[in-house]
Length: 367
Image (tube, rainbow, N blue to C red; front, side, top):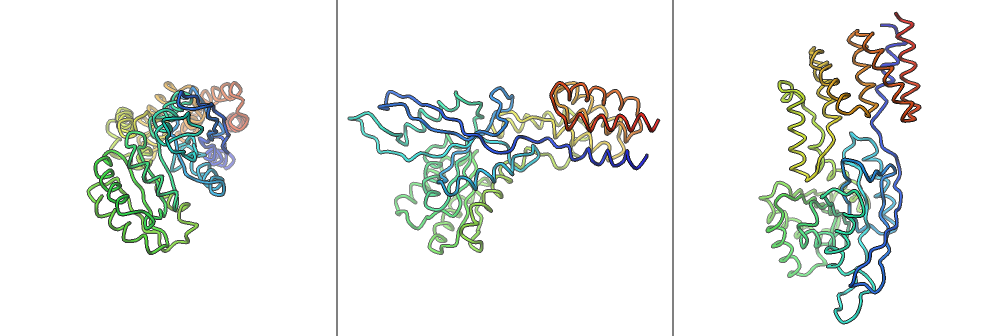
C-alpha cells in the first residue's frame, strides 16, 4: 500500500463523531395558577440541540452560581463534545432561588413544591428531555442539592454532590437525610465527595456507613485536593462512572452472537437509564474487533448492517470504506466512497467530502 494512501487512512481516523461546541441559552415562560405572573427562566442547550432527535437529552439541574456556572458549562462542553466522551450532551437548568409557600397570596416566585410538581414536568413537555435528571451541587449549595435528591426520589435519578458543608446542618436534618436516602436510593446513583474542611468528615463517614449496602452510593475522599478544585475533579470522576456503561470496552463476550448481542445490550441500557441510547459506536467497535481478530467477513457484515439501518450516518459509511481499503476490496471501497461523496454534498459536510474525494482519487491512481 502506497505511503500516501496509508497517510490518508490515518488522517481518516481523526474524522470523529463530534457535536457542536458551546451551550446556547433558551428562554422559557412558565405559567401556573399558583403564580401571580409567568415565571421567565433560561436553560442551556447543547450547541446542536435537536428537538426531534431520537435520543433525548438528560437534564442536569445545578446549584452553580454566576461564578461557577461558566466553569461547569465549559467542563460539560468538553466532556460531551464527542460522542465517545465520558458523558452525553445534557440540557442545563440552574436551580432557582426558592420562595416560601404562602397559601393566602399568589406566589411571585417558585416554591420547592411548584418547581418539582409543575415546572419540571413543564420542561419535559417543552424540550426533548430524557426521563433522567441529574442534580449537582457544591459546598453549602451542595447541602440543598443533597436534600432535594433525598426528598424527591422520582424526580432525580442521580446526584453529584461535591464537598457539601454537612457540619452546618442540624442533627434532625442528618437523621431525615439518612432515612430518606436509605428508603429511596435503590435504582439511583449518589456521588458524594469530601472536601478540605475537617468538620465535615464525621458526617461524611456516617453517611458512608449508613449507605454501605448500596453499590450506587459512591463516596470520594478529596480532602487532599484544593477546595476550589474539588467540584471540577469530582464532577468528571462521577459522570465518567455514572455513564460508563454506555460504551462497550470489551467486545469478546459479544463476538459469538455479533450484532444481536450488541442490540440486546443496548436494550439493557434502556432499562438502566430509562431511555434508548444510539448503538452506532458500539456496533463500530464490534466491527473493529472482528477486523482486529482476523474475522473480516463478520466485520464487513456489521458495517453492512450499520450503513443499511442508519444510511444518514456519514461517518460510519466512511469507516466502512476505510475498512474495505485495508482488506484490499478496492472496487467495493470505491462504491462506498462514491456514496459518501453524494451524501456529504447533501449534508454540506465539507470535511468528509474533501477527505473522501482525496481517498477516492488516490485509489484510482493506485490501480
